Image (cartoon, rainbow, N blue to C red; front, side, top):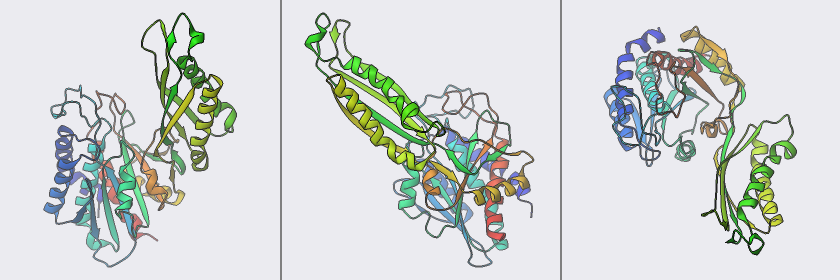
Length: 382
């Protein structure tokens, strides 16, 4: 058995499938064509599956040696609302939509792993479950898949994210908190508009909002231990309509990132207190809308070490990496079963979410081989 060779043999099919998905990107929870394409490929392979509602697929391969453990492999499938500006011959055909985060590659590499493991099912006991997950970009897909039973009976789970601008073929991971929680907040400030020549006649929402921007940073400097990473970013601040009018309304929108699940649960209350008390100090009112997009992704140490051992079998480029502030809804799986999330370097000169995003397709062989090797080893080793 040579999983690297089997991955090499399916490379052309993986590339072709990826290019088709890249040309036809679909938004979160609207991946209807993508779902049909995956299902059709599974039908051709004779692999059993069921559809998620409204989109996504769960497939399974059962080892011929009988029952055993169940390992899940996850690949996400949704795209982003970005107009592609590459010169790729298979660039997006959908105006304003693009696979700029590599989810087309994740789905394709996962399908490649299905092709490989389907050839090896006589050699292992247990089950490999393949989760083609929708809606990662809006932080909703993992929870949706879990609610529909994707983790029932699962003993462990692996995920892979393609890494643009990282060394081609480099597989990395690390134990513990690996991706930050990702939250979004909106603060609506209400004051009283008046003429700019008589500001005392109104209640200035702009001044209040400006103070709020600064006061929110005390969450980092005065509310949380300096040993605890925390990012509070106000990315959008809108107030006012004319140069000589004191604004009666302001709206702040931003994101908060952390690596501690306990702290993550406390953040909405802290934010609301600071926002409302700042507003009161400036005679305004504040309404806070807080949305938890993803929780902290915590890699299980045992799963990481098993995965690293598998990675070394398929790549001579394997390393431990550092945690990052980017969010990933793979975090939801790691709250339920032991899991590990890996990164796969794929070259390129533009980062993820860029309208010029591209990666080296040669990386797919390593990704397919890692998915398959990690699953095989999990089922066959004690």
